[in-house]
Length: 452
Image 1: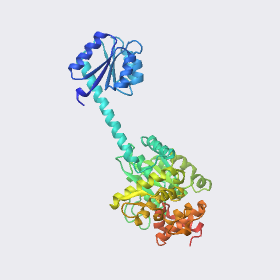
Image 2: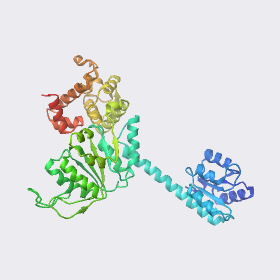
Image 3: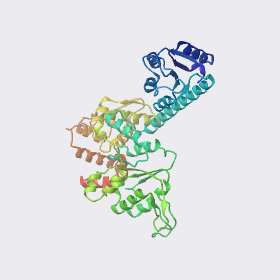
Image 4: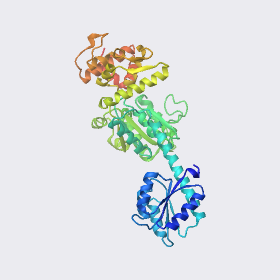
């Protein structure tokens, strides 16, 4: 920023002193505004948006301290004080003034102070812009405008700057990993390792080794030393996804590590310290698991220092259209195929559906719909997966038999699983991924609903 683009506001009730300062700054190439009292300074600060305020302490209507209290968050302020009022000036700095200078004014010293204040303000502005860009980037994959999802954005920003343990709760497919990524990206550990472990995807007999590592010969098949996730995440962040699937015996060991910050590898004797920030995620009802003895209450209290609850998609219906269009735009770019949005009937069907697989299922449904939608066409109702039209109680012209009264939530879920299994050729892992649920969950649901 060049001096000719910098606007200095001088607030001084002594006309001679004010004009002298104004002339000195003008000669240096700055643009200058003059205020005869505190009230005029406030008005000019609000309407002209100066880059810096140079203000006298004692003025009629509104003194320098009042200006500091009201304007210091908006622009840097340098206070001019009479000789012997240093204690007052220090108090002004505690309230937000950048600095002070004693009268009679030493112009060389004042110009140096102004230059320093402007550089500091510019650096603050750049840091705020960088922070805004980082926040937008970190949150870019979490789409929504409803109060429920805005609350999630707010919580992410609140907790990211700390080292507090975070517990992310929500149904499968709601975006728990996206939230974990955002917390880590906005944290002070953003450049450090971010290690992820899905507790439900690792066989029970290997999970302890995955967490803490093992020495050679620790068990049958341990042919060489292995570094565990805790060690890999030292000075960084460890995401323990689906932590509720961990067995109580291992939960006890994990609790000790979280409390002490140290562990030993399986088969080892050396104590290893690790500075790790923990983020946990689960789609389980933790309170029910605690009541049934499947999850330790003391571990839950340790990991739930700060909890983020992700709402299911059925509770944020106003976000469905926004999400669907976002996914359609992504697919248009990836496929090099332009689509003209969704028909009104398709949008209504998506809004009426219960989305047991949540956002992930919606994304898969949009992708499915693009397969039969032509270039530069609207996505029609008939292109959506059949269960969405059926469960929404909307008639599809091509398949009139699908018209029906709205079904129960359980029946909707059953039909969604059956349809996903049909599309996957009976492959349960593929169907589970499409629905955004775990493999254990889909097996449980198949048994529960007696799906053949």
